[in-house]
Image (cartoon, rainbow, N blue to C red; front, side):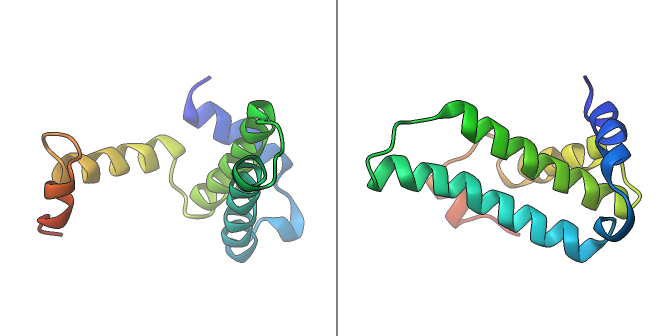
Length: 105
């Protein structure tokens, strides 16, 4: 499945009040928090590592990212491509601490 196919299929479930930038932004933050919570439970609370739960939460993050992109009328592939272009500008030779400290942007 391509990112744009995902976006199209995911947006079949975005209806009514949920099709809103505030909902998208809060959803991204909330679901990212659930990813972090899984890591916290494993790292500090003695829970078993549950990769399938993390993948499930990443899917929820992705749904809200697709929603925000849709609200902005941009395909998810465009969001991905512009991010890669930004990373290539910042770190043309790959990430390093020195490149991060001395980047021009």
